[in-house]
Image (tube, rainbow, N blue to C red; front, side, top):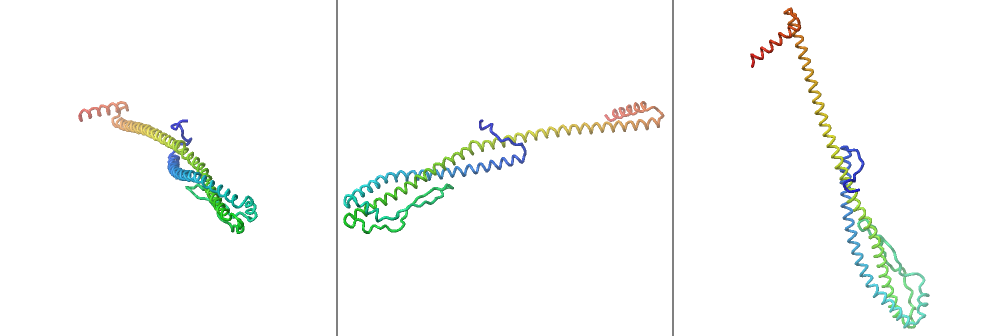
Length: 261
């Protein structure tokens, strides 16, 4: 169906016209608010995209540094350094927690890492390579930080993408379906009300014509009755018939008209 032929099935009344106008005002305000929301989400979406690109570019260098640091630690401290580190670690010292950030009504998940407890590495690399082990740990902590930030950005990116698609679908539905349908319905109700008003006006004119003819008929009847009364009175006074009295009155009225004009 085209936009011009879409309308709601309603009874064309003044009350329904007010309801349709109120719904159109609400749809217009909702369209404006959703449009602003879509623009705000799009701006945030582009900022996150830029951060993802820059984070991925820096992630390559960070991961390369962490890999070289591990190789240097193994070279200096020996291959057994891995078992020594695992023996000293009981629980994870770096943990990740999540929180939510509200952006234009959309809750975006955010991940951040934190240190829980102390790292027991006092005896790690005591014989040799202690400094390289510490450098390796610092490089891998940096890599974890970048990975957590990238995971947070990518999750927010996907969530915003879905929210923008949903919001744009609602904006398009209001702009191309709901508002045209309400506007066509309002036009239809106005046309029907105008037609009803014209019909009422024509009906009133017909009724006035009927009343006018009825009044004229009543006047004519009253006039005839008065003439009958006068003719009857004249016939009684003159001792003539009623028809003769009518003829006499008609002649008198014609004579009076000649005198006047």
